[in-house]
Length: 484
Image: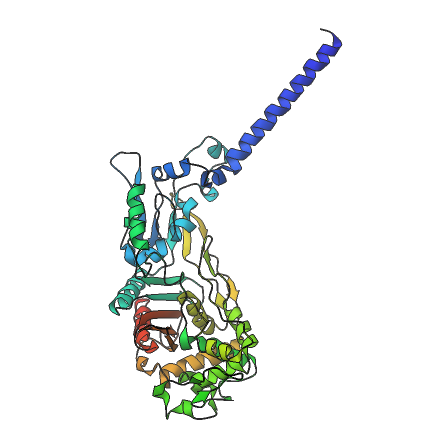
């Protein structure tokens, strides 16, 4: 050949070689590193077609299976099953033909075997499509306490109710109960039409059983929010023995409706003025804490302290699983701040958030990051990953936390929670929130136990007529079940 043709042919071979290498590199990158994103893409129709052809791993608590898969009679598809699902669905969530929630969602790739941590050999396995078995998710849930919580909530007949219990030192969520609840077996079916019908029926129910009441909904926390306001006063230089304003009624500057103490307090300590902070908290004097929020230390200080406890943020539980944000209003109107400071008005919180408030008091001022997954195990039983205990926030100094524990113990010793004397509850705070144009209240209790060395923080909310103290015995049952 002529030299010019040789050069052109050589150049063509070089270009072809470069393009081949580039193609191989792209295929390797796509299969090795983008495969998961492509599988998860909403544009991938096979994402839904293939989801029941995978034997997902199990979700367990205390060694008991909460969720698992079984091969069906066609020998090609797997059916997901749930044990006592109405009790445990706030934890497991569901795995439907269309989507997944709870731990089914947060640990979806670990359960279906596509998580990179389960690749026990090397990249070649991913390139040749070798199937890696799904792993096991071990939760932090205490089965006995979860059952006790759900049964106690159900027994109240409340329209909505929730309970959360946390190991204050570690952040492990031991109880996350919610009612009304649902059976994940009804929506975790192979038929899309059947699943749609089940979802339609559940979504038509006014109290939304698919929505976890412990983390997914917010409620006015009533007087349990006074825990944050009292700690704001400590930040401002008060002590548990400091004399604070009380009295029968409080009128915020600028007008608005006066805020009064409960009718049952007439003639009691709240009518006196001034009184020690510890007594105002124990007796839950509205006028004391309305004044603090409305005037001194004021809205900005209370809001800043609430934010230190986690208000305003979606609190992460696991990757892809978080709680609805709680909130306290930012306002220049003292009457609105006063109302919010007694847990009414625009102040709302999840039971998880209020359990973290109690946990921060108990754990020497530190709030540990809450978590629901203790260990992740490969099918071989090898621990692939485990929980890491981290500090989420430090809203209190050690001294302030000690004083707040004194305040919460005073509630049980001589205050609104004194009927809990003799139970496993060491300290706590009651809260009764009025619900506009409703015949029921949001009845709260937050606290800690067991006696004498408390290690569990608990929050209970029941929606029914009555007072917050009526949620206190549920907290005691949960602590008892935890080993208190």
